[in-house]
Image (cartoon, rainbow, N blue to C red; front, side, top):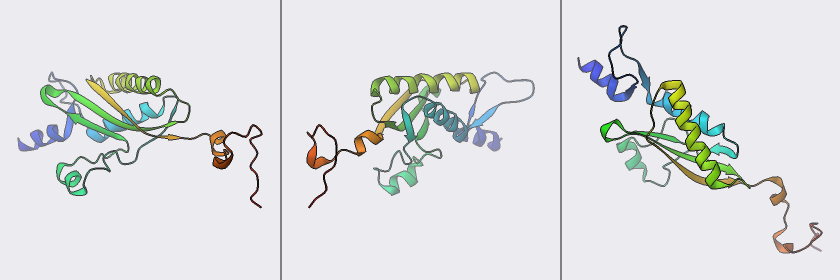
Amino acid sequence: MAKSTDLTSKNFLLTKEQMADGQMLVSKAALEAVAQAAAQGVDGVAAMQAKVYEHLPKYLTRVAGVQPAVPGVLLKKGEDNQVTFDLAVILEYGAVIPKVAFAIQQAVKADLANLAGLVVDSVNVTVTGLVPDEDHQTIDPEHLFDKSGKKESAK
């Protein structure tokens, strides 16, 4: 019987009632992949942060097993089977951060409810960076107030 308790500790049991054919278990990485796809489908999201917890000491992430399998997403199962997702995203420059973050939260909750029947208690979104568009890359820092927008060559 130790094998079934080991499986349920590493995976998520989707239905609480016993089904005739058995139980349905979904891995943590699969649910994180669904959340990642949902977040990347939102307008304004450029990418997911590769290492969510890179600011933590390496020994802590190895011992605690904090480093996520899916880039930018970490799934935590808390007390009373509460499911929480932590997402780290990089947005496109010009995106309205609160609107995009709210859209990410709604998309993740909806996709996990539709695809896995999982009720998500909270989705925490951390904006880790912005990707500048091409217009802002052509600004010359030495001539910020020039109306022409042309770069002058140094002579």
